[in-house]
Image (tube, rainbow, N blue to C red; front, side):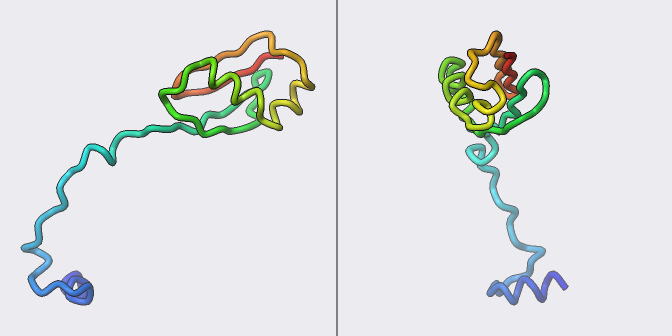
Length: 92
């Protein structure tokens, strides 16, 4: 079956003599993470941010989310907890 599929893809030699693709490290590193945003301990939103973003920038982006504004009612958070690569928690 694999030989038939291999030849259907246009290859003339056997699939068993083909070389395995080389490993490329650039495809294994992550540059962004989708954070769960908790408000008072309950997950209310998600945001995708770069992993190298500073905490001040993360705070500014999170507080601009519509769902965060809705659940905080415009109040300034008492506490902002940011664990890089894990979670964001806003305590109002």
